[in-house]
Image 1 (cartoon, rainbow, N blue to C red):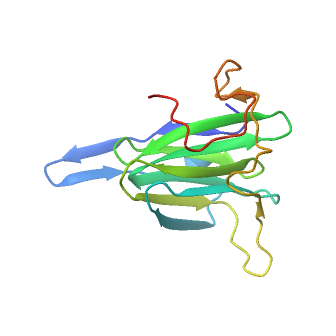
Image 2: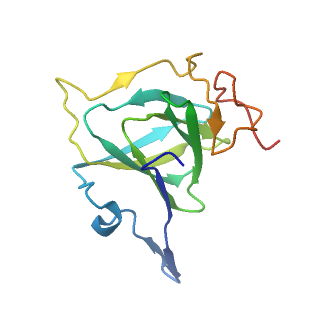
Length: 164
């Protein structure tokens, strides 16, 4: 994976009352002190991409319901990592904000996403740089550490299903 990206399997404790899962802990975050947490709901098929943060923001994503394909792209080395997050198997994904990142909702269910950031959102001067979700300049040479992925060397296609 690209430097700084981390995926963590979350532990769910189940009993007859229901279940409990820790979503974020300071000892998992290191220096990424959480300043703000956010919740979003996205409809099936929605793509929310691409953006990045240039002032040191780090995002930690957890999908509570539904499923997404979360991608991070480094355009200097043309490498892309994709992580599937679902509410069925809780995981967290840490994405350093300097990577272009975004996601697509998978399946027919809304995606309920909670994310924790280490910087407060500045309404007057947001730390966000954007490019179109279908930007033809996003052309990974390496995907998930592989150079032989059939999607390498082509404009990124959010609708391509790698497992048909």
